[in-house]
Image 1 (spheres, rainbow, N blue to C red):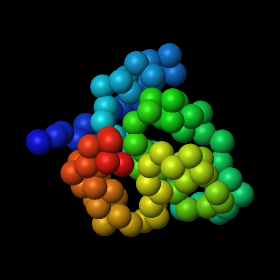
Image 2 (image 1 turned 45 degrees about the vertical axis):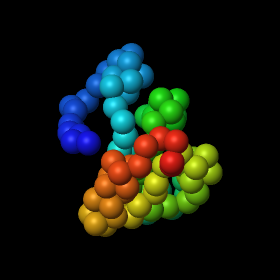
Image 3 (image 1 turned 90 degrees about the horizontal axis):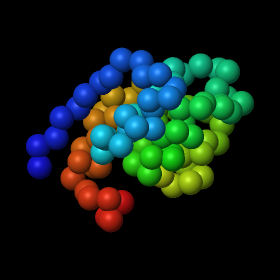
Image 4 (image 1 turned 135 degrees about the vertical axis):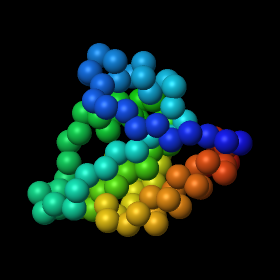
Length: 98
C-alpha cells in the first residue's frame, strides 16, 4: 500500500479533532530539553489520543501518557532512524495487529 506523509502547518484548536480523522498515524515531537525531565502537559497529546490513531512521540523525559496507555511508540527526539522505523512499522501493520 502506497501512503503519503503530509506535514501540516498549524491547525486551530477547534479544527484539530476533525483534521485528525483524515490521518492514519500521528507524530508529536519535542526537543530534548531538561524541562521535560519532570513531565509534560500538552493539550495536543490528549487530542491525539482521543483520535484513536497510533502516535509516534519523540520525547525524552519523565513518564508519559503514550507509554502508559500503550497507544503508540516513544522514541528519542534525536534518533531519525527510530522515527523512520516507527513510521515503517505502522505502515506495514494494520490496526488490528498493533
